[in-house]
Image 1 (cartoon, rainbow, N blue to C red):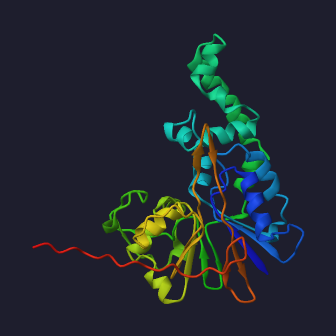
Image 2: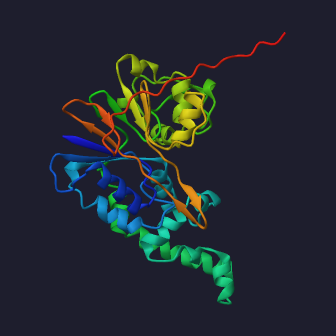
Image 3: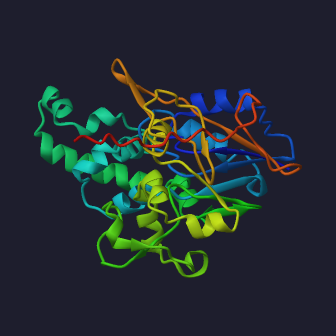
Length: 305
């Protein structure tokens, strides 16, 4: 089998399809498997197109891993009205796409222009949108058992951001502070839904630098993750600022997320594709180039007298 691994699609169907085509992914090839490391929706405008593409892949050749934006979607369904972060994360936009509304209808200015009381109309419109989303096949798909917390293949562990950690200070996991965590040896079998949700929010390179993957690395495991833009991996693990958004690979960690960039009034989201062939279990990018570890640059401390 040949595995094609992507992450943080964020409703950018065109960029995904372009990258998969470059990598040679063939939806009709029974030897090709697509692994998605979370954050399928939010930010882009091609939510429905992306859903249609992913669900056209046979279930036995599509592996879906939950990201923090899948949890945001679940949580927003339960609210009477969005919070500010539901707007900033563009989950509100996703709901509008699914319900067939322009995201503009969830802004006060839209209703001002029509001469209506904006906040009354916003709440009424939101109720209509949520009713549509709740009954959507997209919601049924996101709630299906097809979605996993992680996937393990040979030495590779695929997650959205990081493996669950043991929270020793009972603080919310998305607060990044090393003293609150320790390695959780039974994460595969006993991690709770909340621990998995927290794991999707953490900073992967920070947790890696802090040594929370060293027990897995000692057993030859390699973490494959998204969630955080790869330029930050290069800056914080290798101490080298770079605008390189290609796949990051260093020792026991591989980062995939190119990040979403603003161009004019819209987002642009390039896509990386990691390719692993089970004949040799080597890693390749979407252009067929074998990935090698990047060189770590030691920190040199300047001593002044």
